[in-house]
Length: 540
Image (tube, rainbow, N blue to C red; front, side, top):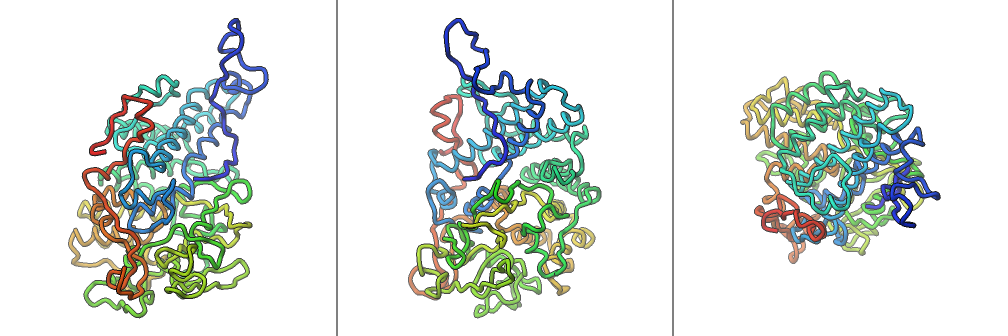
C-alpha cells in the first residue's frame, strides 16, 4: 500500500557500537536519537503523534479490502487481496503479513509516544492530555483492526525490545477487547479529547470519533444494547447530520468530493493532501478512457443488491426491474458508486465522459484489452476531477461517517426487536431521502415486516450506503455469512454468451470460503518462525 508520508517519521533505532569504554546509552554525535530527542525538541510529542496518524488508514487498504468480499474483484494477485477473496491464501500470504506489520508498527509508534511524553519539556498539560487521548484511541483502533481479523493477538502497551518481541504470546481476544474498551472509556469519560477542532487541526481524533470506534467494537461483538446506547448518544448530542449539497440529487455523490471534505457527516477520515501526501487509487480503478487500468472493479453481486426506486429488490414479487434496462429506476446510489454503460464521469470543466462497458465496445468495453474491467463495471465513488498529473489525488477516504452511526443504531434496534416507525424515521428514512428516493413505498416504515425481514432490510441498506468504503468485509464476517457469499462463482455484466457465464453473466472467479478456517486469518508464518510462542489459528 504505497503512500507518501507527509510528516516526520521518528527513528526508534539506537546506534550501538564503538569502543568498549563508551557507554551504550551515549548519544551518537552525528544524529538525533531517542536518547535526546524527547528532551530537546519542544514539538517532539506532536511530531510523534502525527506519525501515529499515518497508520490510521489509507485509501489503498479501504478499497482493496472490498475485493475480499462479494462487492468487488481485483485482477492483481501479488501483494493484494485476490487470494483472500478467493480463499487460496496461505500462512505466507504477503497481504496478511502487510496488515500485521502495518498495524503493529502503528501500535509501536503510539506506545513510544505514551512512554516518552513525560520527557517533553514545557508541554502544556491540556495538550499533553489531548495527545495521550489521541494516541490511546489510535492504538485501540489498530488493535480493533487486528483482533477482528486474527482473533487472539499479541497485546502490549509498551515498546518491546527485540528479545521481548520474539517471545510474546497471543492474548485472548476477550482480554484485548476489554483492554481497548477500558482505554476508550478512560479517554471518553476523562474528557481527554475535544468535540471538534479548529481548521488547523482538522482530521484529528475527537471525543465523538472515540465513541464511534467504541460502538464499532460492540457492533462486531453483537452487543446490541451497547451499540444502541452509544449511537443514540452520538445522534442526540454529537451535532452531526447527513450531508446535503445544493442539488439534492447529487448529495450522496458529493460526500466523496474533495471540495466537501470535513463536512457535517464526517466523523473520522484518513488524511491526505494534494502534492504533499497523495494516493494513486484512481489509476487502479478508472477505465482506460481516463487513463486507468481497472485493477479493481465492482461485481454484479453488488450491482444486484441495489433496490428499485419503489423500495423493492430486483427479484422481489411485483418488482419493476426490467432486464433489458437493468440500471433504470434503481437506487440512485448505484449511479454514484458504480460505472456502467451510459453512466459518466464529470471532468473539472463540466464535460461529461460517458462510458461504454459492453463486451467488445469502444476503449472501455469488457474484454477489449488488459486495462479494461474484469467485470464490465468500473468504480465511480472516489472519482476526483481535481486530480494532479497521472491521477494523483489528495482526497481523504472516510473511515466513519454519520450515516454509519444511523445504520448501526437501526441494526441494533432491529436485532433487539425495537425497530419501529419512530426509529426508522430517525435512521433509514433520512438516509434514503438524502440518497434521492421520493416514493413513499421506499421511504416509509414497512408495516407488518417481521423481525428477520427488518434485519435483512437494514443489512442491505448498510451495503448500499457504505459500498466500497471498507465495511463489507467486517460485516460478512460478523454476520457469519461469508461462507454463503464467498463460495462459488462471482460475476460480471451480462453478455448472454453461452460459454463461461451463468444466466448470461460473466463468470469472474470461482471462490472458496472454508467456514472452519477462513473466519480468522492465519498468523503470518514469518512471525511464527521468529517467535515460537505464537500459536497458529485453527486449521491453518
